[in-house]
Image: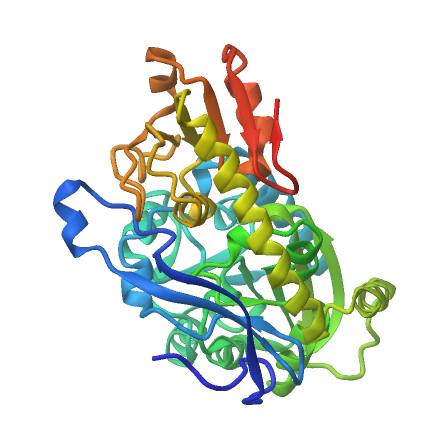
Length: 399
């Protein structure tokens, strides 16, 4: 059932600025043709709060459905391995923690380099299949939702934490207050909450509508995130923009309201005021632009498909939105290196997902790079390809 109040400020003054209609789950990859009959579609309208400006999806899908057999293993993506190696060093250098608790830890991609630095770690993740992968790496990981009960069990076993962190996981939660209460339960009084969230500023600047899916319930800017954090006893003291996932925001908060925010916090807040990121009118205009972007891709590739063979590359959530919004039933295959996806079918269009080596068997005329934020890496891995590459954002390009 859709919520009726804002996740950030609890206002009920919410307005739709984009309606993507009925969509399959972005990560709902099908194990075979037998699963097609059981596939469900869900409404996907996007709202903005007219009081605090928070962009959000109100139709929250049961986490048991979304995450029970999760198909995204972070450690299969080279740039993410590098990101989390760097983030581990950043946490160590900046905060000198002895114990870090990570929620949404996935396969342990951050926990592993933290442990190698000599830091005690504990992870929590909803997905049984993913946490099993982490435990097989010798990591201390709990299957479940990071709430006060799990936080207290970790505190009893390992002590109070210096840092609680979550990367691209906080915004997946319909009730973020549960995580914030859990963080307060386990953090030392002088401990730090560190969040990495997909940034509404990059969503706007790069027109990243293809990240607006059921799994990503909320798109924060620093202005809107600070409102939520303050309600639950956290004071933002540092922030920076980072390139992860096409553009994210790293935020550091404490329970100490006497600590003065860094100059970076003030710089980002000034930028957000200039760009009107918390102004609902900004998002109403954004919604109008998206329809035009989708139409250009739908019409261009639709015409090309009449006389040419087209494959997709990158079976991520972005791909699900593109192929369904543009009706790409003509794609012969979708390439992806992850063993959690290859061999399955795309949600909605039921395009077969294959490993990259299959490309060489019978190369297509065009490759539509749905994972456009990794386009340079993908092209470098497939330098042999002599056909035409297509990327949809920030503008449609053929090269």
